[in-house]
Length: 219
Image (tube, rainbow, N blue to C red; front, side, top):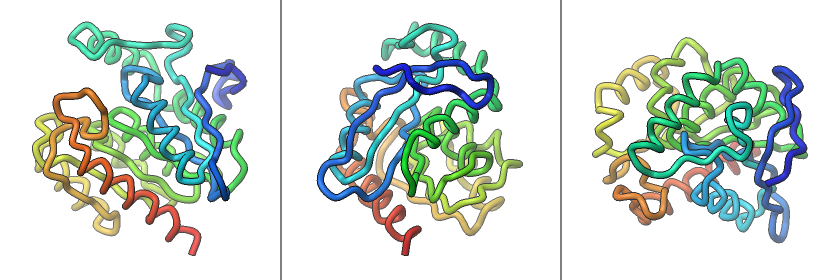
């Protein structure tokens, strides 16, 4: 974990995981964490984007709470992660993500998972230098609907996700009919290896759609 990002919110130094693009570079991508921190799952996602030709960076946006913040994938971890979310105002989070965007050469894309899916929506609305974005199962997107995305964004949801019911997805679609929404035969966290909801087929398809969406934004 490097510590060379300085938030544009308050100048605070925060850590980040980086993975360099393999082969021909296609761009940069900010990969936004779940509530559990820059976990093995998020590092794996960074590595996957790097293998696809993107310089990837995952900022550790809960570093003000605990350097190198990590929370286990259990009830205690959920409580710890949710407390970190409550202690991190959106303006601060946007500034942390902006620092990660600024650390990458353009074109720069943003993606994120769970809590990071909502942060991806936030970045598409508030951050500079974003070409396109892809949000995975972002439950808190519904609390950010007054923040209209300024760049193309695509959304991915699990059809069997109890934390994001069909009515919540419908609300997003009604408010932003031009935003593409993909549903998968899966639950929440379908890209997190080791999760009870992990669905490799859905994750592969959503990732392929994300990469195609990023490429189309440059066409």
